[in-house]
Length: 364
Image (cartoon, rainbow, N blue to C red):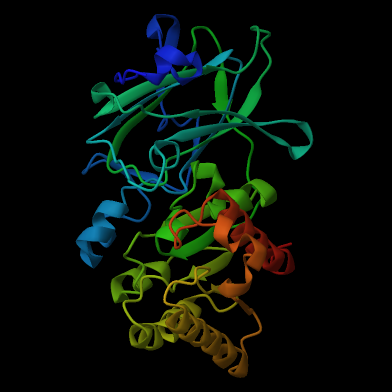
């Protein structure tokens, strides 16, 4: 067979990019007050979406400054009578990764809220590898067959890793209506802190990161402060987290501590500092799930358990420990990671399942 450079979309039309004709649509910024934006805010001075205040992230480390513009955990809730939902995304440059699909690192996922609390997956809006996607892309999907004037309710999940998203627009059919989406439970957000695993690497879709899996089961808002390679319990980050008003704190801090000794010096410090301003907030301490450097991994786990036991001994009745080495069944260990460290969707499913088990005890 003669080798030729192949464009898969010419062979299978399901791989074709969706071309959007905006002439019969109306565009709205996701910052429009008729939408409900969660998990991220917009920094006007730096013209980008952020998870923590831009200046706070900048004061910690360059890596945190950049990763803070990744929209992990960002969500938009809305309702519309439109038969289509389209998207127009602008960023400074596309973020491509060797071990994570664009659908997870750069894609947006659209889920519909059906009756009885059920969720229906509609689509993943995602850039292609084409050169014209280097700074922006558009995409569209049909969400119902005809214009009947009835509202459908949606959640749009933002990418886990895309750097410096400057603008996001949603487009609806001309003449259609839109407004605020389904509300979350009347609870403060769950706060998550940790590493690239916490940030969502390497989920195939942003709604398959473990926090989003939990959110879809519980309908509780959340804030994701996972920073790839930078979850190191630095003082400035700890001071910021002490100010975050939350219903539960899930502390997934383990992976990024440079050494066992560093984790020993910082883990209880992180717990105790957070507890100093959150006297009654449930704290869930989670150790890493992977088996890389297994002997030291067990030492790290024991340090985290030591924090838990010390907290309990000091009278803390609202602290919990999850042994990461027991989260993923032994029979699934070889199937649950992309590279031996970062979970795939199966791995995230098991992490979410383990945390949900504890959340059911502490959140009513």
